[in-house]
Amino acid sequence: MKNEQTVFVGLSGGVDSSVAAVRLLKQGYNVVGVFIKVWQPDFITCNWEEERLSAMKVAAKLDIPFLTFDAEDAYKKKVADYFIREYSAGRTPNPDVMCNHYVKFGVFLDFALAKGADYISTGHYVQRKNDQLHRGVDAEKDQSYFLWSLSQKQLSHSLFPIGDSVKSDIRKEAEEAGLLTAEKKDSQGICFLGQVDIFDFLSHFIELTEGDVVNEQGMTVGTHKGALVYTIGQRHGFCIDGESNNGKSHFVIGKDVTKNTITVSPEEPVLETGRKLLLTKTVWRQPLRPDESYELQYRYRQRPVPVMAADVSDGNTTLSIATETSLPAIGQSAVVYRGTHCLGGGIIDKCQS
Image 1 (cartoon, rainbow, N blue to C red):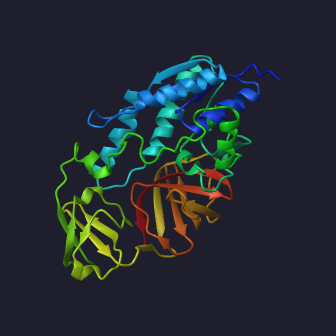
Image 2: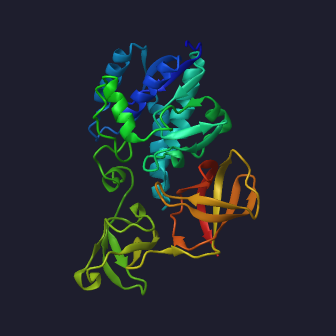
Image 3: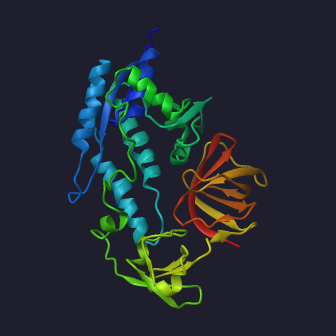
């Protein structure tokens, strides 16, 4: 059955967005494939042309129009610059959230609507039910955590055709459709870094100096590459001397960017029951009610933690932790759920007693 509505699909050159396009065609939409070109620094080998070619071949196989949308400027300002700025301030950023909000569901959505599209679509493993965002069926691939900041307007113009399926079925469907992306490996890590690690990338923009790793008593037990690049709970990327190591992993439990030191412990840092998290820059598609129970996730694929909404005001929200959990990093996204329903979230500004 023919659908008169037009969907611009963000074709990344991967299997997920390819099958999203296949499904939308079967649903009768007018489908246009669009490759979104993002920024990468000149010191990183860029494979965007290869990915664009892969996306173009998918569009040719499906016999749909193909466009390239240049989002370099928005990506540099809203994602890369934010990433550098947050690390420079000693916080832990989440660039995938900003990429989705400002690029895929920001300037790309604006571009699509201006060209006459009714919707945009991506290969995200999430579901839209009754104009509300829900987790994807595949628990291992659910990406609702990265879409918490979408406004109701952004969500209303977005389709997520693969959110009701598991990854293995998506690959099988791509193979049945004869798509070259069927066996393509999933992309890993932060898109603009490529194969470069965070320290190497940031060293081009921030002066990073080696410093001391100290234990909870303040004694020097090792060295690190630069306090700014470490995040709470991290257990790699620094050296502990043999005498202090005792064969155990150590966790970052604190850092002092002024003194350029990080503090480590063999015990993972925890957030005790009753402690509170202050969230800023919040987005709630449905309002939280004070003293009601919700589930909180502040890391991708983390098991949700029960919380209570202690205080909700314009732009800021305080959540009370209902059970002991690992200590989150300042600057990370905190996303609130009720079951599979993603209500919204905010940026962790501080932990309060």
